[in-house]
Length: 461
Ligand code: OOG
Ligand code: NI
Image (cartoon, rainbow, N blue to C red):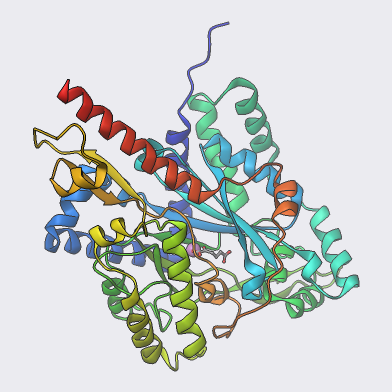
């Protein structure tokens, strides 16, 4: 039998991320408004920052810019998580990183499904931050077993979706028709269901344990709770949001504004209050509301080495010890000032960051001829024979941006909580190990160094 023509996973991912974006725009109109604003600001930024524009074009990042977004979902059981891993694998997305959200007082732990190869990231870096409920962090034992029972009775994947995942695994991929069907079926898992699977009374009890517990347990599926476009200038978007009828959080989470952007800066706006319908025995349906879904934007910057990340974490912790933003936004200005002040200790210059090994870089030969054969990499960059630029951070900072996570949980200001990491249990439930993000950046940098030196050696020969 002839091998069937396979749609590349990168293509399936792009189709899926477009379909998801269309779905979310239909479900959450403010997302459409936000996308328009981000597109306008990105256009302005490219016009006023010629160097940035050139870099984006040289790297083929222009194409990914309008496609680029991440989403987030939360599931309730190991089986749901393990099946999601197989579903995302069909689209070339693998679990990267382990995030312990218990430090932010949230009873989940998480990973990010995303592409990892440079070419795949360039084509479409769509990511889904995926959290698993930790019932072990819910104190009330009766409630815990009730929640487990509710979760055990639901099926979040359509039979056709499960069948197509099997088929992709068995046959090494999906053909055209299967790929389109897969996108449509997979989308069913992520859409919003306004019918709760429980009564108002159970919902209220789960909500009292933690709002996220109710969000995860009480519905037919793990509705996508936000979809985040990437902007080139988050301050400009934040400033412009009120004029478009969107009320952002008081501060932008993450590092301060800098000449060389670091890691990830994010801001969000409040979840919609959506009408839902509770289950009742034989009586009339009971109406209620639920806030699950919110909007978010982000700006991505340099991926930091362990050393750079340690410095970032230390500086941010200093600021958060000194100033806490209240839930009503009080102290926001003091926080922003303290942040800018603290980060003076972090070099804001690509050469200095590279010399101090604070960030990962991608190296490439320039067109300048006559590279001295015995020069080291730093000398070749200094002499203009090799160009270096920071690798983009492709991952998440949910703990330092805990405000994002709690923005839909009602009024919670910034807080710090005890740590209960359980990575081994998470990987057991996932059915696989998570990739180490630091190792991925180090490997990407090393690969670019080897390729650069090979080109220079070939030129010299
Ligand atoms: C996920 C929050 C994490 C981000 O951008 O840090 C996240 C959630 O609320 O489920 O999306
Ligand atoms: Ni997010």
